[in-house]
Length: 263
Image 1 (cartoon, rainbow, N blue to C red):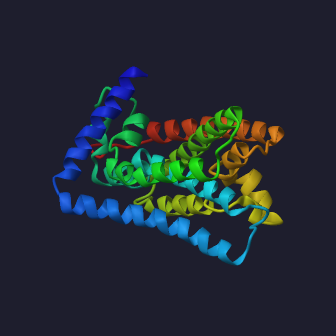
Image 2: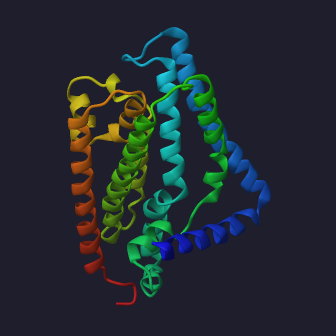
Image 3: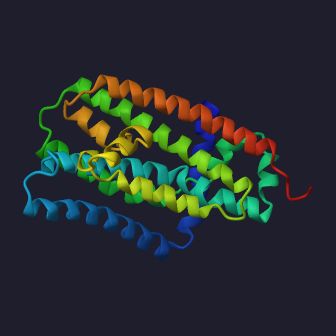
């Protein structure tokens, strides 16, 4: 574990140096990303100018959900999202994946964390401010156990997204360009910006059990707010565990049947 954390740190430093070589571009990109986060908060603010409740959620509750979503989004954008969605298909198309296989590292780890995008992490300083604002204005008193449960569920949400993306990314071994699935993955993530309670009927069942995007932000937020649903938590843990096993098998199958560019 220590070895891989050290490697991630090295990846981070190298990529930051490359990005900072073009400083105007770097700072404009950071500004653009921070602006996008603010727009999401303003969107919810505008909604609550017209309605006091959204599917039983007050503004302070949705504010928590929004910064939870932004935390998850910033984490995956900084780490594995672009690596698996865009950089891996490009490596396979150009034949550079053969070079990656010569490295004394797990191919999935290298493919997922080869480029750590600290540009996204830098723009996430706004997320830290939003967390500070939430705790000082809306969560002056909160349960420590609820916060621990929140962090655990947030972790399972990240594992769920990583496993799902590994399955999507594995299709790049058979297709010319798998970036379309990367766009589809982004659409899934964006759906998690809203409380899953707003969906009714078949869509509610779909997003809670078949394709549980609720685990991205809604479930952790509810846990933090003190709304517990232990049977559903168990379901999400089991679902995530099974999805992780499936993603590992799919990746290994794809890697086993990979025909290198030199063959």
